[in-house]
Amino acid sequence: MRYDTLIRNALIIDGGNRPGYPADLAIHDGRIQRIGELAGATAVQDIDAAGRVLAPGFIDVHTHDDTVVIRQPQMLPKLSQGVTTVIVGNCGISAAPVSLKGDPPDPMNLLGERSMFVYPRFRDYRTAVDAARPAVNVAALVGHTALRSNHLTDLYRTASVDEITAMREQLRESLEDGALGLSSGLAYASAFAADTDEVLQLAQELTAFGAVYTTHLRSEFEPVLEAMDEAFFIARAAKVPVIISHLKCAGAGNWGRSPQLLAALEQAAREHPVGCDCYPYAASSSTLDLKQVTEAYPITITWSTPHPEQDGRDLNAIASDWGLGLLAAAERLQPAGAVYHGMDENDVRRILAHPLSMIGSDGLPEDPFPHPRLWGAFPRVLGHFSRDLGLFPLHTAVHKMTGLCAARFGLQQRGEIREGHWADLVLFDPARVRDLADFKHPQQAAEGIDGVWVNGVCSYVEGQASGQRMGRFLPRHGDLSRGFNSAD
Ligand code: ZN
Ligand code: CU
Image (cartoon, rainbow, N blue to C red):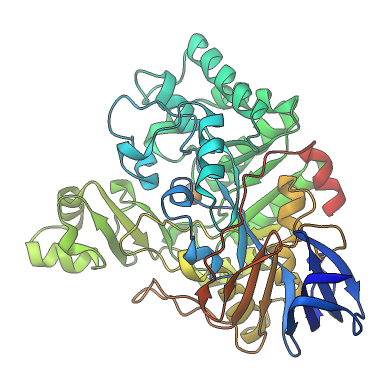
């Protein structure tokens, strides 16, 4: 038997939160064919991986890559980190199913301008992803705000009975066409007016499919515990698993409360499948929200439609150049995007280290001056947090970006290195891996990612995309609530 690829002498960290073991691994026909001692075997491509770690390709569970996987299918910001699957449609915003009547409402504009929204049905999006052949696999949630924008004449009120019925039908059709579940972004003005019952009724559509509910909470500031309670209530009432998106303590008045949040998460997890994702930085990023303008910490402008010359500048500096207060300057910049340095590092570390948390980049690929998480999140966890700070062992870091994610989102035969699984793999140097993207120079590929295979094909090697794009659309499989139990 001549294999497609042999990777010899690697330390295999299999994604199951177990320490690594040395072995050879053979890839054939897109799958992991053999793991073991394969000294006598031959292959078209033969790689000596001594001193390096072979892990399952990373699964970025929290992305806004909805339209970029089609427009820039090489997906270098993710591929260069070792990511082989992205989950799109988070925070209530998705590219599908969407029929816009005008410009995309905030924050749907994070996914691109009006012309990017050309998928009235979920299956149109799915077809477009497969046609674009992105370099990474794509699985997709349906956004609550996206549904609202289709069916509500006014986003600043809760939905009527008829509007809820219409949204439920569209959600059901999307689930039948392979959507993973429903996401919400209740903190944003375009969804904040939705009452709990509106979201619950949509979540009830997930139950029959065993699909998942993910939520950018109604608040990440002082009322964050109440917002978590709302999420748990919805999930329990609808009998669906729930993932809290980018769990954090936002705002200076909220620092130090991560133990309370994690205790609430653990308490809920005793009775119901719950989890969270997080990104490894003490700064958030989204559209510029006037309610979040503060003097308590720095805010960087990442884009501004009327003032693109201010991209990458501090709001404070812009305001003083203009002889304005912060709020007046922010108003003049709208619509705009921002990075808010509004978290405490200790909270970030506690949430990152918690066994219920997965890694999700929350990167914003449209941004001309993006938060560095877009290019750096995964290597930063491996290098900075695991190796340099010793926050958790390397195999736990890998688990939080592979096996745990695949179980939570029902991505079958991915996320763990096992014979028969799809060969989504990353080879990295554990001594050298590190993120180079930072807040000053945010668009830089990481160091130490030596090879990435997607569906068995070498897609990134020695700092370069190979040009092969083997990603595919991953439809929902089976019942996610069962997947949760097997992961714990
Ligand atoms: Zn969000
Ligand atoms: Cu997000």
